Figure 1 (cartoon, rainbow, N blue to C red):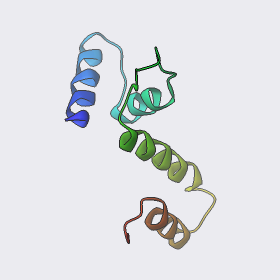
Figure 2 (figure 1 turned 60 degrees about the horizontal axis):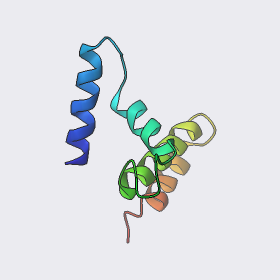
Figure 3 (figure 1 turned 45 degrees about the vertical axis):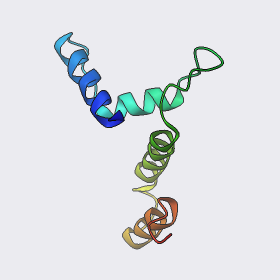
Length: 80
């Protein structure tokens, strides 16, 4: 449901000539400060996914394919 909400928001922005992507919107929401004490902006799973995804993208040019695959398995906890 949360991913569908992000997709709808991206499409609404697209029609308002504010070009953005799901990745950028997810990253913006994950790093945005809370508006008030009870506001969470985005669910914790998507926030962790966004942070992990951005870290993996930043490491693409610095590690080998095998190391990148290993980090993906460790960070996303596929084995557990």
